[in-house]
Length: 68
Image (tube, rainbow, N blue to C red; front, side):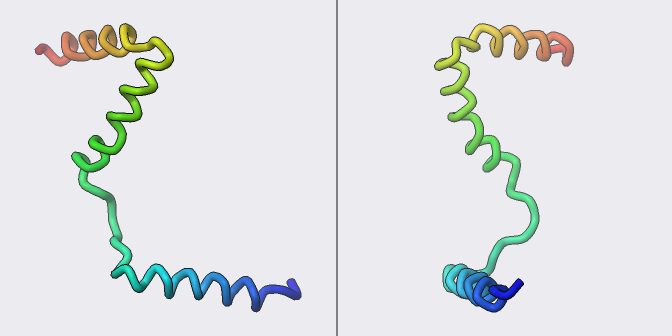
């Protein structure tokens, strides 16, 4: 507890540095942006670990359940 002033100063400096880039956005990001961020990594992991067939099988099962 003797070093709390230093940690507070460091935290405040970080906030000031971030503030120079603009206001911090609040709320959730758009679902399409989140999807665009996640899909490339998911596809890469599916290919690397050999799970592509399982992904296709599950996707087709879900499509059948939804009636498409």
